[in-house]
Length: 149
Image (cartoon, rainbow, N blue to C red; front, side, top):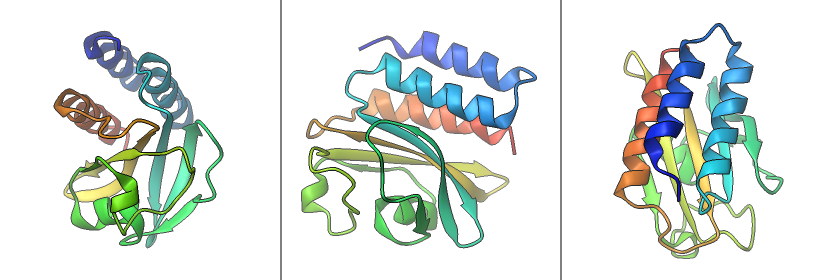
């Protein structure tokens, strides 16, 4: 695992740049996926009306390109407004299966002015993959991305 500081610094520089939002989101996903081996699938969903719409991702294809807020773990994180870290997706009735290999998931809302505008969704093929340091990093990334809204 790579130290999160250089990754966070790279994302901060990217967010502060003149790059388009599309490039910022794409590069953020790439930086997270390439620097953390236990991040099997990394995506960013954006809120459109009452749905989360998959903006960009790296990993196996997902059938869930549009998720109703309140549905699944992603929809629950958007509805509840806080990070959800699931150590065993097979034991969570909210889980919307994307891959048989996925064992754990963390979803971090992106909040702008008390409103959820998107979220970072990460799956891992390892059970209980996400630790406190991962959550701190991803919540910091979400705060940075929120400045783009």
